[in-house]
Length: 229
Image (cartoon, helix red, strand yellow):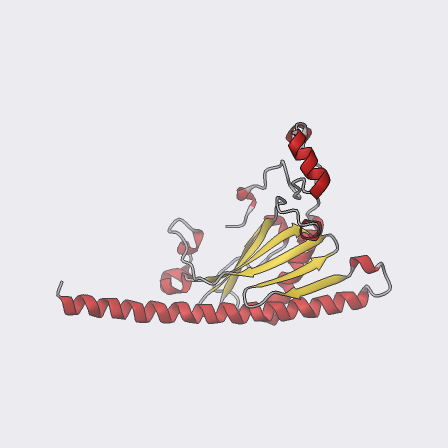
């Protein structure tokens, strides 16, 4: 291949792919901004309805800048995290079998917003060994089409890329489904055999720092095969 042709191909690829990824990044940023607005609105709405009840169950929203936000709901902490990079799906993913992607492979490139569920006490007491769980991922492409990958019991209905354009309505439904799922996802007592042994050093550490590792499914398998493809 001639030098000129090689450089021209590099320039062409850089231009087209970089523009594509920048558009997706902009769409994901806009979607995440909309998400934070809805988190704030839902917090205000639900707190208004909870005003005459126990103040300990009030919701609390925190904006942590361009790439992160959190919603505290009673003993749960939902952390929403936008990734700064753009991703492509592996060739074994079900998305490649859809007519939508067969017609335009570039529509498979996506930005990602991750949703994690932690115990609020894990952060309150600085228990750095505690575990959080990936509850869902929101994928957004160049056309602002999206789909949600999450636990099957979560109630996320938007599992087909190309069917819906991300907007305030869908964001609100995703947030409400996320909150309900995390509230239903209870903290379980770990199996006896998983906690039956502890060293002197560990018990001293637990007593002084309250850092015994805790997670909603500690000692249980949080199954990957229980995720919508």
